[in-house]
Structures are given as C-alpha cells and as structure tokens.
Image 1 (cartoon, rainbow, N blue to C red):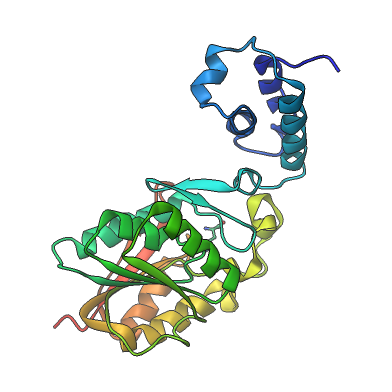
Image 2: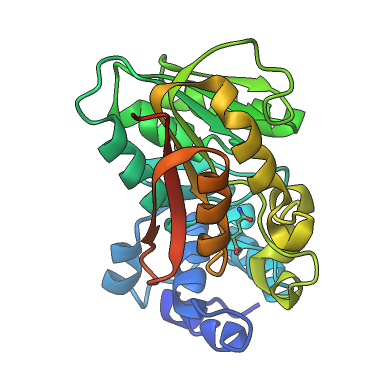
Length: 282
Ligand code: GLN
C-alpha cells in the first residue's frame, strides 16, 4: 500500500465536499485524531508520511464520515463553551447556538449569591456543566429522562472535576422533589416531526427524543412553561431555547402563563433562538 502524506490525507476532503459544509475541518479533525496532534501540526508537516496504522485508522474513520456519521460521534467528543464534552448517540450533540443560552443565563444570575439552577433535558450536561464551571457558587441540577444521558452527563461532570452540579433521571419535572430555583433553563426537543431537516446531516444520527416534539415542535416547550412556576422562586426566570420560527409562539405561551418581562434574543446565526420570562416579578 503506497503511504499517504499528511497533504494527501487532507486532499480526501474533496470526497466530502458534497456531503458536509465543513469538509476541510472534518478531514483535518479526523487526521488530528489519528495522529494525536493539534491542527497546526498538519500545516507544518504536510510531507510527513502516515504510518500504516495511522493510515488504516484515518481511512476507517473517513469512511464513517462519508456515510454521514457526525464528526462528534466519530471523535467521541465535542467542544462546547470552554469545555470538551464526551458525546454519544444517546443524546443531542451540543450546538454553538446553545452557547447563546449559556451567555444569557450567566447575565441573569450575575449578582445573585449561590443561585440554584435547574437544567431540563440536560443530555451531555452541556448547559449545566458550562454554568457550573462559570459559577463555582451556583448549585446546578440537570435532569434527563434517558438513563444513558444521565450517565454521560455524570461522567462529563467527573472528568471536569465539577462538584457543584449533579444529575438525576426525570421526565421533565415528574421525578423532581418539591424545590425552588432562581433559574430554570432548557434546550428541549422542538423540531416539527414533519420537518424535512430531519432527513439531512447530523440529526439523522441523534435520538429523536432529543429533537422532535408534537404540536409542530411546541409540545415540550408548552409542557415546561406550564409546570415551571411550581419550581421557580419569586423573581425566578425560565429561559428556553426554541426553533428559529417559534419565538413569537413561545413568548405568547410565557405571557399567557403569567410570566412577565418576556423577551427573546438572536443566536450567532441571527435567528431568534432563546426566550425567557420572569415569574411574578411585581
Ligand atoms: N437546534 C437543533 C437543530 O435544529 C435541534 C435541537 C433541539 O431540538 N433542541 O438541529
């Protein structure tokens, strides 16, 4: 087998161009993983030849990407906020859009002492862990109805050495003991079951339970909004991620349910992505 140079391996990107918006990055990340080197190494040593083992591993991983498997699943991790998180097919792959929810959450609890925070549908634990890592004084509880997701979030917590966050299995609020939080956050499933977007890209490899909700994608958002007031402290905030066309509907449900100061904010792609309301702030 003729050996591949790093430059030859990077040229595999051409095969991915039609399948991935990030063919260059995908190819480079797979190669970095096989060589156990940072990206800068690839561009410093383009003529370096791969060993037979490295080449075999690269070709095997590249073949998985060619059939659409998400890069995060192939590598087994994804960076979110300042954290590297283990991911698995048991939960949603953390998205950059959700960092905008973390930013808003940190603004909301700014100036509060020892805030209690609840993250519903925590998945990898991304939001809960990002908040816990930024605010050592906060106490964060992450809930997920999928046992494997709870185990994954807990192993991410342990790997990061965070002691102010814990995870528990619960279907939304169902298994949660009576308690009050200053902030409840959630990135629930919100995609319409008929959305053609579900047939393309990474979402094909993610659990439907993390993506899809009945009622045009609104069912879980509505359920959370209807229950949250039982678990919010006076002046507490409910902060939700939602689809790019759902902001007006989410604001309406928040207002109908008695939340005040209801607002939305755009993500880095300029889509209205998060909305929030304050519980009885008179
Ligand atoms: N934002 C994700 C997507 O559109 C979906 C995440 C979710 O449903 N919470 O791919």
